[in-house]
Image (cartoon, rainbow, N blue to C red; front, side, top):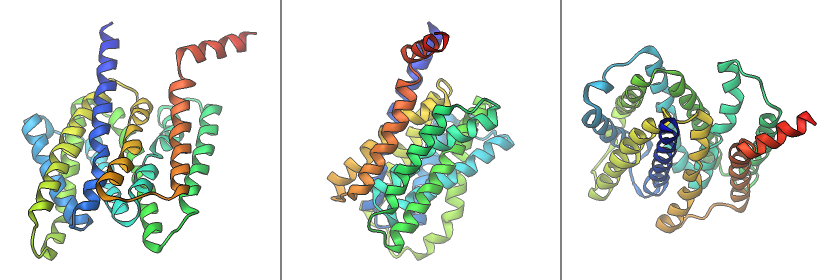
Length: 290
């Protein structure tokens, strides 16, 4: 019963984190700072939040934690870059191809058997991804889509790495990831002419709530759910992200991007929640016996 309660708490935590994450797109669009300036301030605020919340815990790290911090750096910087260059819908849907890479690499890392259903899921999702490259694509859009794909690969590596490492080092991965981002982005500050108050409060929100508190909640939940389960629950982010951007910024994704996103989200959701349900598994076992 206690294990079940922990699992339910984990699901709620991942869901809450995903809702906070989903607000990022609209603020990234509205903020006038460039990718690296925005990333510097956001990660500085996020690192301070982690230091205040967890104190000495975030300072201690092992090699695996620092590797996960590197994946975290790629996830955040390339997602901001993608959101600046292409539509928010393209950026978030392509980043959330992460479960595809989890399905590919988890059997390799954990030495489990490749399942036929996973291969089918991957093929369908890849077809959905192609639709993002069939609409209007200026050079900026193309670069943004590629940045979003790279962010998705890193996101999958981050999921798997956080699950693989010891739980006591999970917070330090995120803390050092934000420190690394801030250090990498320092040179971009010299090109800022003036920091607008409107930009300052928005990057403060992104750092404190959308990243700092969201990832703290996410790390808590990830200890209590499976990597693939966490990535599926997180699908609420790509569903809500374009909605906030539409109402707050007025950006409308292309029809092909919407279709591609629906295919990816629906396929992975069916794979995780329906085909993995106890009822469906029971029916498949019964069928195999017959």
